[in-house]
Amino acid sequence: MNKTGTVLLASAVGVLALLVPFSLSMFLAQMQGREDALATLHDITEEVLQRADTARLQINDAISALNNHPAGAPCSTEQLARMGMLSGAFSHVAGMGRLEGDALICTTLGTLDMRVNLGKPDASRQSGMLFWSAVELPGLPGQAFTVVGRDGYAALADADLGLDLLNRNSALSLAFFIGADRQVAGHRGIIRGEWTNRYRDQLIQFEDDGYLVVIRPSRTTDSAALAAMPLSLVAAQVRSSAYVLGPVGLALGVLLTGAVGAVARRRLSLSGELQAAFERNEFFVEYQPIIDLSNGRCVGAEALARWRNEDGVLVSPNVFIPLAEAHGVIGRITARVMEIVVREAAGLLRTNPGVHISINLSPEDLHSHDAQIRMRELAQHADIPPASLMFEITERGLMAPEKARNVLLAVRAGGFRMAIDDFGTGHSNLSYLATYELDFLKIDKMFVDTLGTGAPTSLVTFHIIDLARSLGMQVIAEGVETQAQRAILQARGVQYAQGWLFGRPMSIEELEGFIAQVGPGAPPSSQSI
Ligand code: C2E
Ligand code: MG
Ligand code: MG
Image (tube, rainbow, N blue to C red):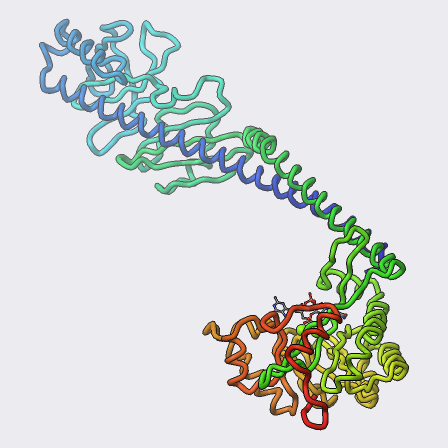
């Protein structure tokens, strides 16, 4: 990718890196705010039901106590005194009274002996309990009570019973209702008929007409509690979540954008540095020996490009080769490596015909004849037999065969050797392995690593070895690090290997020393390299 492309891509990714975490945090705030609102409503309904349950038990107990010990004649001073005592004993019972049909004939609250017609009960329970809601008593204007009656006795509870857990100016709505016909026994705020109509004795939550609503059935009776929150209040909860999550999202976005910027700057500066590296002559080559497993001799070496930049930092080829490919300068690197190899290794290759040097080609190098023509000229000039030089082509290089075909045939015709590199890591069409009569198949380190581990992929390694043999290719195992790997490879008939077990990439002088020590491979007439 060129400089403009990198800048454009980095800008786009940078904007996304900022927006995505922020939008995500806003979305999370939305969810969180709604979750919080629902949790509040669930808690409130639970609490209302709990309070109602306590009140119900207390009322029951108070009426039973009075029933068991009436303490004198109906509405007598003694009975009223006992009623007053029981009211004091039960926190949810504000007062007590005596019923005659649908009328209260005396109570411990308000004007004691005035008859109050309650009318038809608002709700009733099978246990015989009757409910009248919003009852006002003479002498206590403006104060409403819920009257619960049974067996001729009445308990008077605050009409707000169970609903007083909210302060009066809360924007929440609450209702407590009783019985199969969902009679509202008490409520606060706006309650819509449609809400209670939706209720089917199961916990429900829904949004309706600007409200978030929860209705919860009691676990012990046929009553239920409803709590509703205006959506404007939910929005406030969302806002407060957003105040927490928003800055986190923003900070993350800024961090990510910074990281994208840093990577882009590094890429841009690396590509600039790469250009300058040619002028400053910062590339050099190291050679990694390739060993004949049958006798331990060195039959060749792979030339590996190295770049020590202006600051003395050694940049890995895994970084600068893809970068050079992306910036269209890989051809210059290939040319530089070939020049260095010919300059440094010509003597070694001339005196050791059983030793070859292999050079890596990128897919781009196979799209023009430049590389192979250059190599031909250089070899001729230095008097190096073409068979002493090998090209390593990756599977990626064979992916556009129509482009590579003529170049590969020319390489073959020029007498150079050819290897397929990193075999098994790409997607090459196997038929091309046969078409170009490649000499070697280099099994990637990834497969060598599986040997002796019992990993199922180690079977793939064996298949690759068999495949190479059936195509008449010789095998070089890459990245051999242990004696165990070497033994398995040798037992499988692999002829050649490269790896730290034998030697790391080294300078040409070190390679010469290495070959002097282990011995060079036999000349081509007596062996296959
Ligand atoms: P490659 O061609 O497969 O080279 C083998 C890589 O494996 C080298 O890494 C080598 O140092 C490493 N290696 C060898 N034996 C062992 C071992 O036993 N253990 C471990 N852990 N590693 C081992 P390097 O030199 O870093 O090169 C990486 C890749 O960069 C090469 O993989 C090749 O694809 C590319 N490359 C290097 N030089 C050139 C070049 O001149 N031109 C092109 N086009 N690509 C190159
Ligand atoms: Mg290679
Ligand atoms: Mg390789």
